Image (cartoon, rainbow, N blue to C red; front, side, top):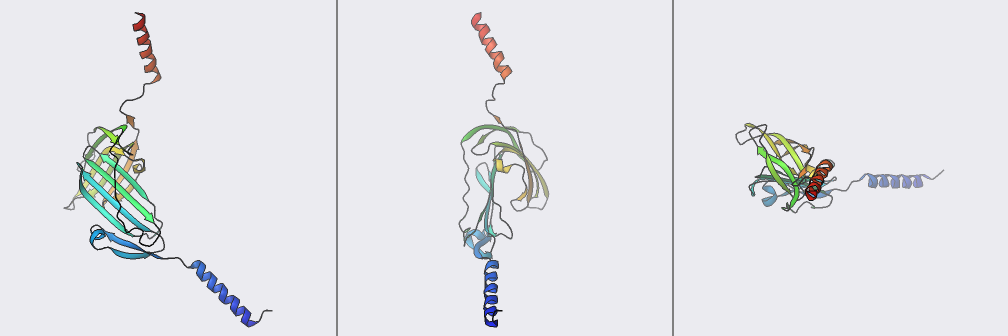
Length: 219
């Protein structure tokens, strides 16, 4: 049997090892929302992750809405980035990022959009006072290769309930969402089949054209 002094030492080592294994590292994140992120950011401590989220709404190419937030994640942090163009005037970008180190979310997210046409065309329109709108064709650009339908509910500056409906081009990550954007607008999205500006010929159509061409040559 081991002497009491040896047992005490082993017990102390076991307690110290267990404490080390259960201790979770905490680190500091930047914490702010809206204008605070520019003028008066604060800090928070977490053992999960820091997050940074930026949302931008542009109307006819001019920034008309901005929501920015940074802080400590209370649980698991899941990144998400997407964009959509509804009608010819309205473009929305969303980027939620996660990181795990001291002050890793301090820098602001810079959102960018590729303006190069990608050959996809979608029906597009937008309204914030009606459950439906009449679409016109829209040529998609950049990574927005999906045709999306967006429905949502929110409130205006006078606290009046508004229904929105939109159609247009979106990134694949914008499909099948059910979430809140810009602080108080609840949206749902669904993607539809896309089409290019020049649809591919079906085998039957191709055969008919070939027959007509051959008939013309023979005559």
